[in-house]
Length: 219
Image (cartoon, rainbow, N blue to C red):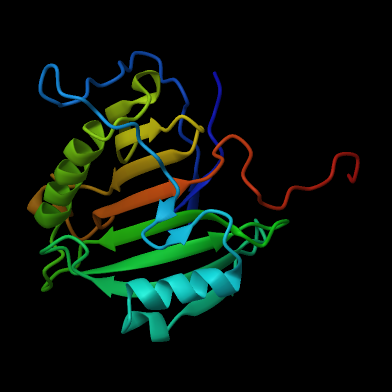
């Protein structure tokens, strides 16, 4: 079994099987005979793969004029990548605030991945139901997006959630949508259950992520 490169999911590095036993490629939801434009995963909005930190910051300010003036920056302790982040509201109506993270590679110092994270919160627009609805909307959007048919997986169950959609473009760039947390817990268990969260990732090279790795022979 092959595995994609690790993808940062709410602070946890999650490995997802490239080909899941028993999982069937999803069929694209397009009208019969309709022409489908080939998918191109180049980044998120104005931020494109290969940009330097200065260029990414400029792209963020262009796409998010308000939040773009409050860009956080941190270094991932394990992977040694630089993560630029902002909070953006209502990227999808009714989903509340999302955290958009722009990840710069360890060696290249250039944009290799963008993660968009929503987390359900009580007493806010970002309810579990709204995130499940957003997951369904995005899945249908991507299913019609012209991704390589042999790469598409939809609604694959994980121990605590689902790979709602995963697909590759012609250059093996990946989009992946993961819904995690408990959506159907009994009332008495809800306080113990992990909050529902949705992560959308655009990934330059899932097979060979530009992250720090201990050199062979060091230990």
